[in-house]
Length: 83
Image 1 (spheres, one colour):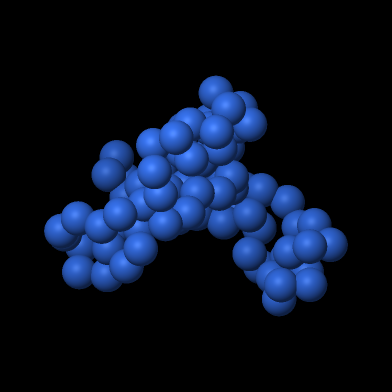
Image 2 (image 1 turned 120 degrees about the vertical axis):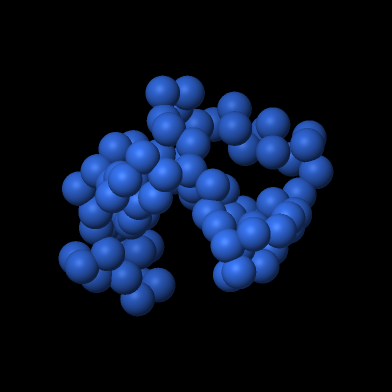
């Protein structure tokens, strides 16, 4: 994702959300940004937590998500790496 693409996406998101960075599979290294999405974050410690849906929409249900994917936590913006 290019910076210009990221800026355009960020313009549409509530600026009060916490930003959560998804780790890579090995827990280290670097990867280009692939996607970002709005969800819910629940901290387990000061450096680790879980993410999930804020609410279940018809679109989410069509994609196979259910009530178990909704997480009661803080509104967040989740950044996903390519791998």
